[in-house]
Image 1 (cartoon, rainbow, N blue to C red):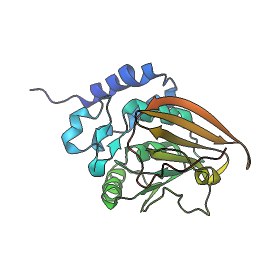
Image 2: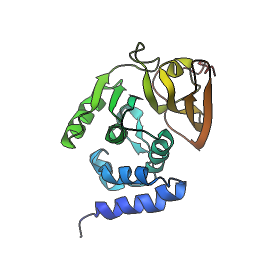
Image 3: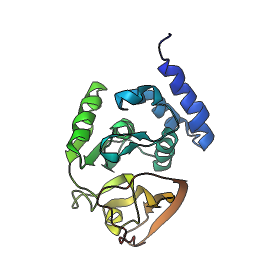
Image 4: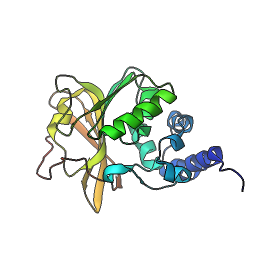
Amino acid sequence: MSPFNFEQARFNMIEQQIRPWDVLDQRTLDLIASVPREQFVPQDYCKLAFADINIPLAQGQVMMSPKVEARLLQALRLNPNDSVLEIGTGSGYLTALLAKVANHVNSVDIFPEFIQAAEVKLKALNINNVTLQVGDAINGWNTNVNYDVIVLTGSVPVLTSHFQDQLEEGGCLFAIVGEEPIMQAQLITKISQTKTNQELLFETVLPPLLGANSTQRFVL
């Protein structure tokens, strides 16, 4: 049996899944091509690393499908000066993608095993502009610090204003909001201290962040 062709699978993922899902930004496509997704999936799912599915992780979490990650990155329009807060490190793959573009990524996960595994994988790829921390960030993290970009990698039933409060002016927040069977990926841009813009991107389904409260409300 011939060895699995990861490069062909990566090419097919981009051309057959990601590009047809309205991800046409070449910088985003090149970024996806540059990070070895297969090194971040659980070993049993290695040959499914490029499939159009949410790959199961430990603790009932998942790795987002490739096209969702790509749409997320395209929407954020990251630049080399950006500071990023990622809530939910998970596999560490999205962390790596964010770090390849941004100035620095602070990534927080409630599960120590995810942080430990991500640290090993990021170091193996010589990605050093990431701070990994264990903690519960559903209600914010380092709340005296503002970020250019905040990414929630799990869903929330509704979105609270404290995430908006931690954005710099002009900064943006990516979140998947709602409850099964309907969730909406949203991009919130902070125009000023009193004004934000909300863009509805696409529908998807993702497990909730631990501690997300269905009574929370987002204040525009």
